[in-house]
Image 1 (cartoon, rainbow, N blue to C red):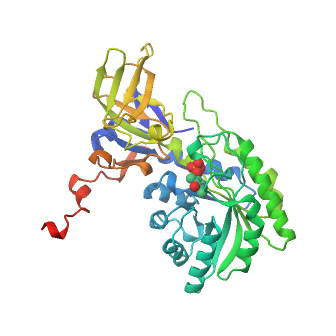
Image 2: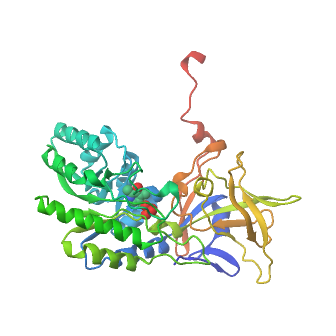
Image 3: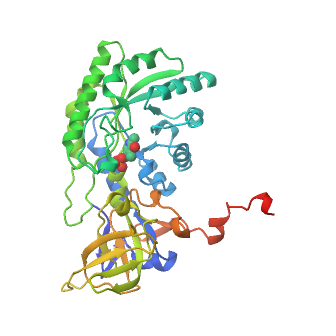
Length: 422
Ligand SMILES: *Cc1c(COP(=O)(O)O)cnc(C)c1O
């Protein structure tokens, strides 16, 4: 459920109309709903009531400071995948004892920064990383709290570019090597073995691959106990999918997911950590754009928008579907016709939707891409010399610009001519 709806014929985020925001900040822009973020986090957290659970929001889904701050105040931690994200999460007020550092290629500098900050957990993904971390920790005279990310070799039915839990993927320690790496970790100085972690992919709409993964984790945890290694945490990663089609709002409810986790792992007396990203933020955000031109061709019509693939890359990168809503509510009897919805970028791939059935939308009208709150703004670039677009947070009847549009001067400020040209 989200808090985006038509009111008096205009699309609103909570009690603020998209036109009001557009007048204030210009287009395109991202808009997030506080009520929706709050609801998603609360529903997820409450589903784990009765278990010792920590929810660490996957910062890479939406790294805006205001979003992180809101989720942090509601009790969420953060899962970060770079020192930049860690810095962002700390700056947003997320307590360090709720921050997890994931990622397959953390540098020594990043590992040192994580140890200096004193975060909750570092998820180690390879033997060389474990050895580097041990050396860095020893040099610093500290112990690194480590979970080993294992690769359960479970196929999740999702887009090829977002499946991560098969053995041919680059992520995690191969299942067969997991017991050996725990023994190695225990023997290494500077390493405090805390737990086991997985993350099998993203936008997964079926609980079966999660269940198969968690069952494997259970087996591993019990096997390690026999060998005298007692893990205190299990980190289940993220990956639960969200509905991208408003006409088909079916996706596994967090309650079903949590019930399955309880069933498989609930009796182990072990802390449960979750890293949802998309589930919390996806449907809590929209991208609003203006139609620049309507181009009627011989065989096709095009809606040419002021937003491009640099602002929202998911359609170009993953063939992802986003619902496109006219901000002015179409008349009940408006007839839909197929149209290609494209951006202004000089790339054929700058195509948001092919032959989408939409009501007539004139030039200068606004359209909104739904489910753009996750992997939207964070993936944006300045390709074609386009400034990153503003992000706006709505709360009831008020809104705030939580990332402003840079000026053109700011965009070039980091560049300089070489000395020898001067
Ligand atoms: C991307 C990622 C997540 C979040 O995935 P979602 O599909 O957005 O829930 C969680 N954990 C790790 C390690 C990730 O890389």
